[in-house]
Image (cartoon, rainbow, N blue to C red; front, side, top):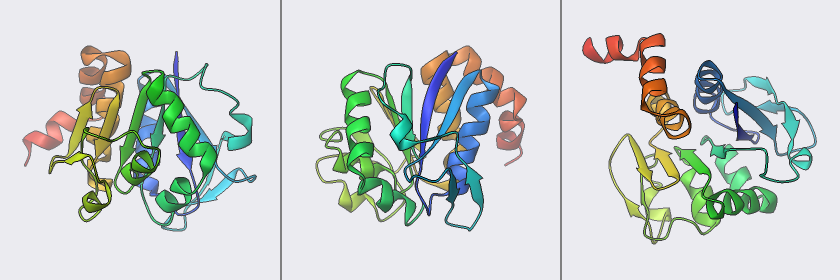
Length: 189
């Protein structure tokens, strides 16, 4: 089973983090919620409290993990961006050619980690100007090599499916889309 870290800081966007956690688990990818503080209870930007599986101090290396997810939300993304250990982990996963995924304001963390130069990315409208050196595009979800980025809360379904596709393949992603009824919802538009 693949394992992937989902980084949580106070003020994280609940839909983005928890949709990923749920959909990854459905696809047999262990989602490990990581609090960057010493407390396992983390409060989201909409005051929903979540119990993390681990604290950042418990993540000693990237060896046992397939990737890292950086949700958006404010001040969650800023709190992640200001944490040196989070930035180190992002760089380590990137340099090891493991998955680095980020949504909404989260790509600012990837920018701060110095991994977006020349990369095609997307983000929440208005944050693109902060991603100097990146090629910001107006798309829901973008994959450039081992980096996946997405626009925001409404893109969380597509973001999570793209992560599943990257880690488990196209067939597993199609199976997930069917299970969560995403194809039916999209055809009703």
